[in-house]
Image (cartoon, rainbow, N blue to C red; front, side, top):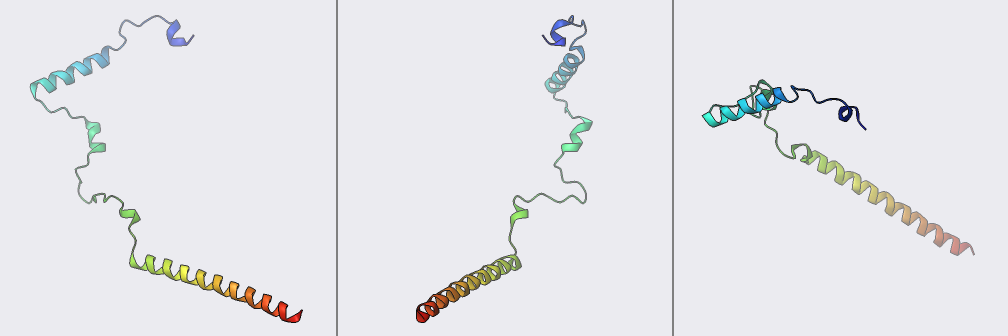
Length: 98
């Protein structure tokens, strides 16, 4: 059994939360804006000097990145072809010795 289940119910349990909910409900019904000081932390209004977030902007490729990747792939292909050519030449030389 948990500690909270074993103890007596407090007479003021939830009073502050209930009061806050009722206050917010009354503000909403009267048409008053319901804002909190903490809402500013999550405001997406784009304050001074703040850049808008562009979706996937971190993943866009630049021409130099594409060229570098193409060069790397080309070098890797050339190395594999050279290796295969050397292997073929060794097999041919070995056959000629026998």
